[in-house]
Amino acid sequence: HAAHPLMHTPLSSLETKWPEHSMVSGSPFAGGSLPLVVDPMCGTGTCVLECAFVWPLATYIMGDNSRAQTEQAAENAAAQTKHCQSSMRPAACINVVQWDAAALPLASNTVDVMLCDMPFGRQYGTVASNHTLYPLWLAEFGRVITVGGLLIALTSETVLMRPNLTRIFTLQSNRPGGAQTDTDAAVCAERWRWVEVETLPMKLGSLHATLHVWRKTAC
Image (cartoon, rainbow, N blue to C red; front, side, top):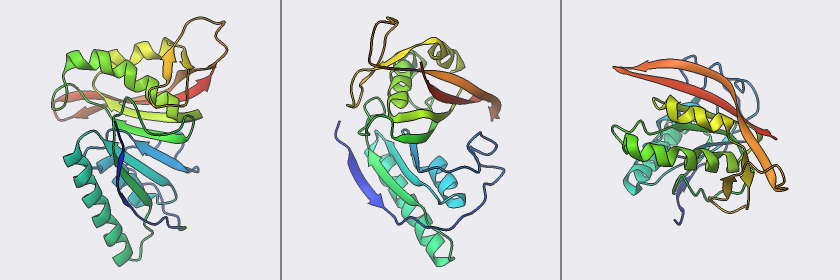
């Protein structure tokens, strides 16, 4: 699927503090340097926009497979940038792209942190389709994340996340969708796995969800 850039705003050089209510508050990278942060399923952009508002010292890319959602995310990002500029706050560099989360138009090992509110199989997608899509998404996310980089994923589908902690992934190419699994130790291509850093139970109304913090580690 082709990627369609929708907007781009300037990167500020000023610093701000993380809020306690942020999705990534208290995570292992809070307070560190974040050159590139990506949300592959951004919807209207809530996660990235909150993060960028309080921590503009990063480059952000957010995308979704829905044209309507990415257009709304671009409008929201533009409105936030205008607000920051009018209030003399630093405005982060935010890019909005329409893409397929299973075949991201990003080079391998380039993303420092990925934030993702993954489909629960209720409002978007189905529980049945998640069984097929979760392994594809987690392989592709790992392809683009740097070794040592973080995945911070919110989902109610913990049962679909856990099996991926035991998988060994092999990077077969630098192209979108190039991450595959392989259990043969003789394969000499780049090999990596997910390591669990932290899990935070959350309640979203009547739904029970978990915030998973995983780190990409070389095998």
